[in-house]
Image (cartoon, rainbow, N blue to C red):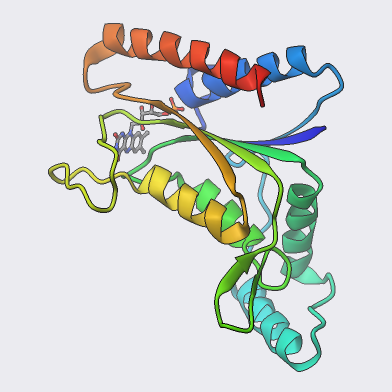
Length: 216
Ligand SMILES: Cc1cc2nc3c(=O)[nH]c(=O)nc-3n(C[C@H](O)[C@H](O)[C@H](O)COP(=O)(O)O)c2cc1C
């Protein structure tokens, strides 16, 4: 079994989400000694550029898909797209650990999503015009940390000016790409109620991660 672990905090061993992800992966390895873990830190590992060239290649890719059913070959920025899609597809299971930044995900994780969400490769459109995810059969574990507290129920439940686009967005992208088994460990509030409260929340999340990792 191969797990792709995508880490989206730049805070190293001070990161709550990374620490809980590490406990999760250790428990997973203990329960399945033959598990292979492929680690990607979207802050540290230098994601390939996806800008002017990549965006125009994406549009050319779509045009070619519609004309001939064949996508674009690897070249320039599109090579980075194909490499990361291959890496994601080769994983049996995926873990995403992420900080919340400005109610959503940190920008390098969005960069990663912009690389791997590609028509004909990770999602398609059926004859009824509906999107169909192509990453079927992979479990996804989300480990999400935030400084404040967010109530469930987005987008129907208001919580002052606080809105959780972190979990909502990642769950939306996961469903779009075809993930059906999505699990979540939330750490909150990691700043708003002070360090003693955060330590308790972290300890509970570590325990939950050990159990969830062993069963992943
Ligand atoms: C740039 C930045 C933006 C943040 N924005 C939010 C936010 O919108 N809402 C929130 O509740 N916490 C916010 N926080 C706090 C972090 O989400 C919180 O400290 C979390 O535990 C960080 O995860 P980590 O320890 O894995 O890095 C922000 C922190 C940083 C550094």
